[in-house]
Amino acid sequence: MKTAAWTHWIALPVSLLIWGLVAALLDSALLPTPLAVLQTLWGEVQAGELQHHLGVTLRRVLLSFALAMALGTLLGVWMGRAPLVDALLDPLLVLFLNLPALVTIILLYVWLGLVETAAVLAVVINKVPNVAVTVREGARSLDHRLEQMAEVYHFTRWQRLAHVWTPQLFPYLMAATRGGLALIWKIVLVVELLGRSDGVGFQLHMAFQVFDVASLLAYSLAFIAVVQVIELAVLQPLERRASYWRQAGDRHA
Image 1 (cartoon, rainbow, N blue to C red):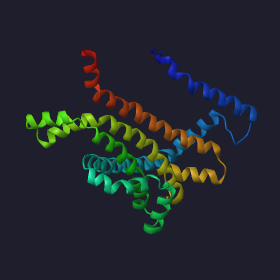
Image 2: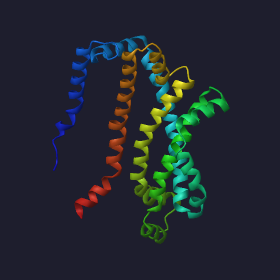
Image 3: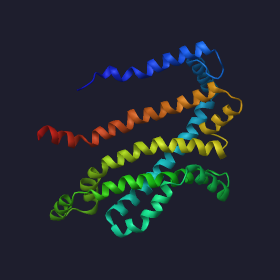
Image 4: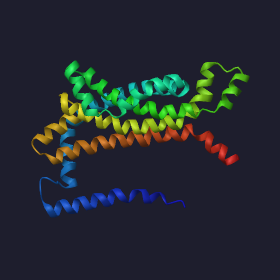
């Protein structure tokens, strides 16, 4: 049964109302009201701090995301299409999937120092296995009949990539993309908290030192809002556009 569009806008306002009521009743600095958080957020905007640190974190997220998606996709397709490669690399993939992000971050900071390269590399290493596992399943499920059609019509490698492989892999790539953004920004915050002198993670660390909960919530909510904008303005329209051919096929079936 299809639900009304307005039902999606109930949970957040209700949660905000409950937060405000509980904070007003407790009257504690450990749980500031939404208005207090908003005032802190506006103060950071006026000082230019929020834009600076948010921009730094977004740069790290986007760079790490692009590298992890590229490497993970190549690895996943390779493993999915080559059984020997899959058998050889699968144990390493399982190892890195179960390696805690904190261990990777600490080791790279120890080996490379507290530098930007170590920060980005730590995020990439933690994300590549997740992308590879997801894309590998897509590569394994490629329709061999479409491959035969491409051979009959003498498709070039680029035509196969654009018209045969990419449409079939797209749902898996979108799953890896959504999961990637959710995971990467969390790892980036830990990276910044442990070894950088700027970024949202660094600001959260500084706020924690003085138990400034209003700043903790302000920076967290600001970054969550940015990630939501990326989801609504970029990922969802891209998914609808790329899956249009499936919907059109269903309508004509």
